[in-house]
Amino acid sequence: MHFQLTDDQKLIQDTAREFAQNELAPLAGKFDEEQRFPSEIVGRLAELGFMGMFVPEEFGGAGTDNLSYIIAVEEISRVCASTGVIVSVNNSLVCHPLLKFGSDEQKRRVLTPLAKGQKLGAYSLTEPGSGSDAASLRTVAVKKGDRYVLNGRKCFVTNGPNADFVLIFATIDPTKRSKGICCFIVEKGMKGFSVGTIEKKMGIRAALSCELVLDDVEVPAANLLGEEGQGFKVAMNTLDGGRNGIAAQALGIAQASLDASVRYAKERVQFGKPIAEFQAVQWMLADMKTSIDAARLLTYRAAVSKETQEYYGLETAEAKLFASHVAVDCAIKAVQIHGGAGYMHDHPVERFMRDSKITELYEGTSEIQRLVIANNVLKAAAK
Ligand code: CAA
Image 1 (tube, rainbow, N blue to C red):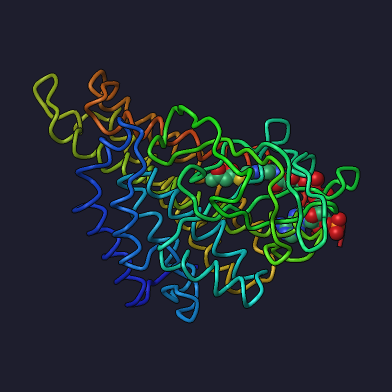
Image 2: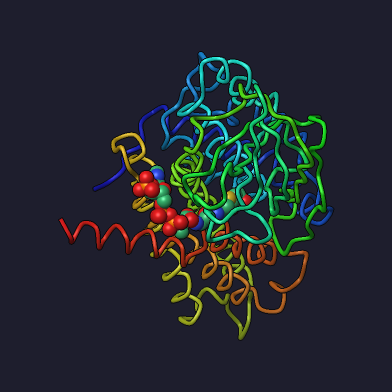
């Protein structure tokens, strides 16, 4: 299997690359240092059509294929992984479920401004007591007439402090586990809905994450996404695509680590010659290049599978599991090649190493990806 990008895909790759190199690269370190949401960059990404890429034009999107979107996240993350995940969350975790499960009215009122990048979205599943075991969530929704009243506390919500619309997962009956869960479109400004602590993080510090507090928030029934009790399936199907976005983010970090290492190894002279001439360094570069190519194949295959298969969770779990490991490994190798200089804040490889770790944690840890893969393997073997 090989991927020959189409002219349209190449154009999107070039556009994303040029934008990232010219407009984002000069600011990425500063955003990280200041832990500042890159609003001006998100505005430009909206103008370029990157906030709702695979959403049809009719609902404000760019109408691209899924692989184009994945390539754009890769290119953006190659320069700034924080911006990469902001784009990935808006596209994969918010636009996708609205497009797949939303009513026509929700598509016009909520999806369209999100896909145009006029509004920002967040996805909120995790709670202090419910991470990998997502079905054990405890935020409750009680139906009262034509409204649901939501109470609970969410955490680690990427884009949370900046979001206009948040997909909140809550249960109408905790004893039913996954079958009690519903997905609600909660809007900024709704009474009782507030941002709690904004987290101080190891990496992706410009993509702000926070707690969200729901204190008797009255959500109109028109804001239920999908059917009552279908929320867990909405959450899981959404993460199947989201994990592909994180694989692309990981790929971008890994590629950036290799790019920086090659540049540095050619410039840095020790023992009378550039360190690129030492086999110890060459082997690291060779291993980085090989693993990045393998991660790219898995990530692009997963992107295509979303358009050719009804279920693509196996492909995206494999891509995320592998690419996130590659990102961490390549970023650590990049710091090693840079030596003491790589440990210093002035070199971007230090940021790449901090940013890489999250790819093994969010949208399902590597252990959860292995669980999904193993379940698929065992199910296939039982047939
Ligand atoms: N698509 C559709 N439906 C699915 C599904 C999928 N991919 N996976 C499971 N389901 C369905 C099952 O078919 C089952 O339905 P039925 O009862 O009708 O048969 C139902 O969901 C329950 O499935 P399981 O019994 O497999 O559920 P489980 O409780 O054992 O959990 C799990 C499975 C894979 C461990 C899941 O809980 C999981 O993915 N956990 C990780 C959570 C996660 O990724 N969190 C990330 C938070 S978001 C985030 O990180 C965003 C960010 O910051 C950027």
